[in-house]
Length: 323
Image 1 (cartoon, rainbow, N blue to C red):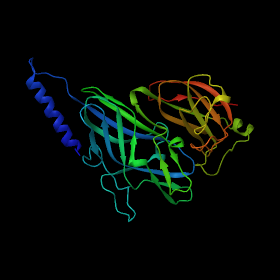
Image 2 (image 1 turned 90 degrees about the horizontal axis):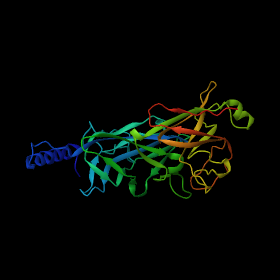
Image 3 (image 1 turned 180 degrees about the vertical axis):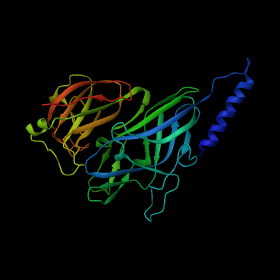
Image 4 (image 1 turned 45 degrees about the vertical axis):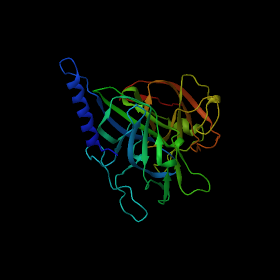
């Protein structure tokens, strides 16, 4: 396994050799690119924390063999922390634990900063997940969070020589996290995870009128600020009919691109946010049904829908649901 420092040195040497062997003035394009990776999340019901323990990042499918970077091998690029612990309470080395529930909407946390990867088109990004991941449930107890084969396999990444590229892994836990009957703890699946180039995405925020919630017998002004009162689903394309919209486990015509909860701020506002959305036109739909099992087709009734256009920008687009 190569560390960040070792890999960067190898790539720099390769660039120098290419310059020496050229027939011109020795100037060559850089052979590597700078890669930054962050993680973000959309909230999920029934949890106070969702800690994922990251161990390694790997890019594959470039004809050069896999390039792997282990957390903590270079603290300036991939710093470890002490959040991930084994059954005896010992810190698991070369891990970084990130609580996804702290990263809703456009919030994110850096996992890799300034890593040097060989330039090219990579078919897959893989994340190795260590033991120590857990879900803190509403009663304060912790249940283990497992990942099949301890590995998350994601989409392609293109890195041009000499460039700096910022990617974000968006965890839509309403799709990705399940609690299988008869099994110990939770399972985190790649379903609902989106790997996006930050230069190609935007964000969505909005509010819901309290009168709309009251008129539809929805929950209003809960004492617990972590209790969702409604849900907003996002579907690719405009003018999607309410009757043809599916929940996360359903099989209707249009499947959700993403979904999030609506929360009360304790005073007067009911708001929601979705981050790292591919630029394009979408239908945003509101429901007061907050339970959505990603393994089951739940009965979800939609109250309203509206078209919204997401632009590639750090400034969120507004989408408000009024009476």
